[in-house]
Image (cartoon, rainbow, N blue to C red):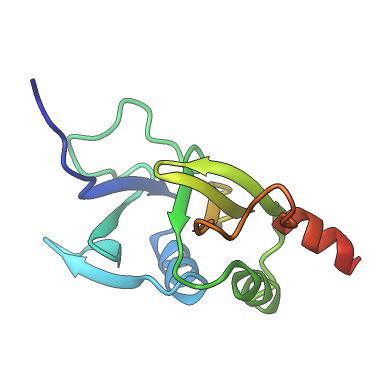
Length: 147
């Protein structure tokens, strides 16, 4: 039996490596790294996203590398209200959220938006134990109360 420990990296095929680097570093604070023979990656935590230029992918590659086909969820240390304010300040339209979802390790509160290739990006915070209960307001309720 194989036992997987963690994700090391994933690959995004993009229309413009430069635009993707600007977005993910400028909006999400990822670090742009150059490796190999001038290849680009976006690092965060203990993981990275390798970028492939559409039509000039590194081999081997996915069967159908397509810009805009990814759906990514990142867990952020930054509180969701600060994330929302930052996205608004950066003129990144929020497509949905905050909404409650189920992450790999429990309940999360998330916002959704798109990157330059129209990949769906979800930024989330885990809901801490004791933070929620039958009488606690959800992030959605809190947003509705502000309206």
